[in-house]
Image 1: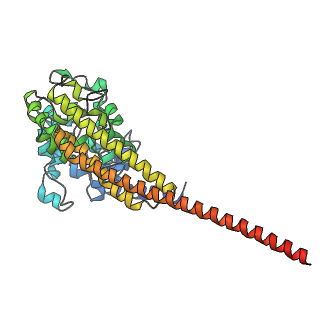
Image 2: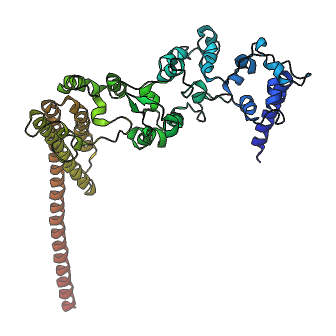
Image 3: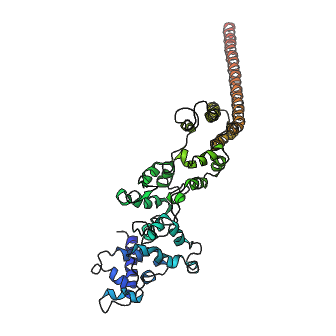
Length: 427
């Protein structure tokens, strides 16, 4: 056991002993003779954010921890007449936590930036409504997400509410088929495959595997304390927080009004919700996996527009590929290609713009961006081709020069031999 671990254990024991001298709560809960699980007191004494801020058991539970020592009766410390509040009733936990967390003046002393509206938001959430309106005890309360006596700040990677851990926290209930079977949504059983789908999605891979905090976790779309299923309009609003250009293009597109009339979710209709996969240019068009053919009939204006957009996208991609290949070939032959790559970057940027502008569903808009980009890429290729021609001409010139040099050397050698032969004859 390392020296550092020994110091940590000693610190925990010392802290616990100090608290035990002052509190029968700690004294009992640190004793395996008094309670079956001593980890609660250890966790609270070691890392709990409230303990570090100077709070003790009575700040949440009330009671009188000075009692129970001499009398050897812990129940005396838990006398309701002394203000003791049990946390065994799940319906009381949000109110218990809000005693401090809803007090703005009180919270300013510890963390002025921390919101004080969590409890009000919670009451608007599906969890809060089920708890208070339906009297259900199977919904999430504060301690289910934040923990109890070992509560860690959300910035701590061990915390259940650390950004990259949130999907796992939600999964504890929402992936449990037997636990969720009593809940319904619009008359249908509530799905329990959200986490499985999310973990395979582009968002889930970013958050769970790559530790990316910019990709959405469950609370990014559903909310935190006010968690609720997004409705038709709020789905697109959630997506638009990260993809504002796409949202603006869609809102000004002909699909916007059609989606409203058909009561379709906007972004979700094409991209899905929990199982959002990486986008592909093949999602647009009239063949294969194109989504356009799911709604538009053959020869309809919508499908003609889709074909036009796909043609422009493929044309730009083809020209880009040809030009990039030419640049790579030129580099291998010694042509400096930094400027060519820089110039071609404008066309690559245009392809990114087009992939966003696709949400306008306007072929003219795609052509407006794509045509100059194609022209630019062709100009770059022409410049590269000219450089390759210059290289070839230089190679031809070098070859011709080399032949002349060789002929001169051979002529000189022949002349030297003739001179040597003449000298030998004279001698």
